[in-house]
Length: 315
Figure 1 (tube, rainbow, N blue to C red):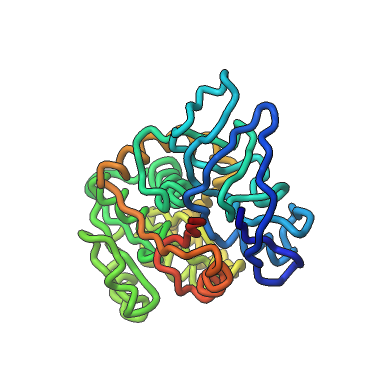
Figure 2: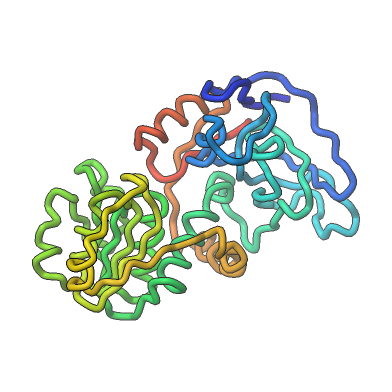
């Protein structure tokens, strides 16, 4: 069996032959059809994450596949399509960058509707984050104007689609001209360099920002007074300086999205999101890589060159 393993912190994964997994009591043996490649995987492989598996370890904190074998009382028949995440996968134990894996039952979620494996392996974070950011934190309303910053990325594009579905008018802001074509259909696409008019009009009442960094407060001023700015990420930087007099005058609420605390809520809304993805109401862009190409995928991820979500296909 082939797998991609990290042998030392800060080094690229090596694809090699590894022993077949042996299913233990209470575990589920799964044929992995797709393994997610994300920023968390890269952080863990750097050795800078709080949870550190013992090298060599198989990376991949999420994935999807089909059940090969499970306990009789697990409710999982062979052939069931499942999503794999949680219980330390890729963090405290071997993950999904492999052909087969045996995991605890809690790490296995059967899908409510069929999904293409690459989508099944990578939809959970962007789809549920978008839902929580829009509905639970931002409380989007039908007819209001919404600005999504980073609308070409996996999370941003999902936010934009769900905002449209909620009846909002949506403007999607991207950093580069080549990303304009990746903004979902029905969203007005604007390049960041040409977004000055948003600050002059201040027509929007809700902003969802996936970038963070020093420009966050400036972008919050695209929203009218009394509006909301929902902050999801910090890929543009982890810090922002707040000038209290200006912030008070702007009167825009900065609202954080904490998906660790919202994990239970994410699992609650996931089945409906799966249904909407399966029926084509929502779409998720994925870029597929072979196991041998995971090092290249990690490099592209760090450089911001991945369109949507990166996924490894073991077969």
